[in-house]
Image (tube, rainbow, N blue to C red; front, side):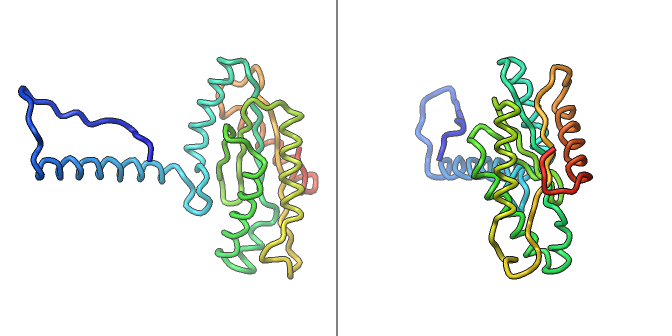
Length: 201
């Protein structure tokens, strides 16, 4: 419902558009809207509706530059669902998609409008917390981890309980790009998984 722009049609003299010309303008507007919608959809994960990896990195780089300019903090949490393949193998991909959606819902409950969340791998997510220090970010990460561990769902009758492992880092003076921040969060994620999972490192 937002105005995105204008189309300007000029001529050397004032005139009224006839019905055919107005219909052509409507067709052009529809074409532009379809292109904008296709561009938007290409940036999103089709299952979760979150940013995909490429668009998350693009948005992350912009946020990093803004944080540098404003002198504000950034925190990045990379997390994945422990033993996620077990879900797809035992109950199928529809069940796996439901777990992804449930985890996304929980993560979204703990973030603010300015924060970014993306699905960057099969069961891996990234959460960029804007203007957020390490202590605040750790509190958010632990709240998400705790809520996922307690979430009811389609598997409450089985022995499977979703859990997440996460790696958390904050913007450092030496970071040249968003990729530096992301790599450090990923290293922390591997540490959490190596230390027994269901934890934030």
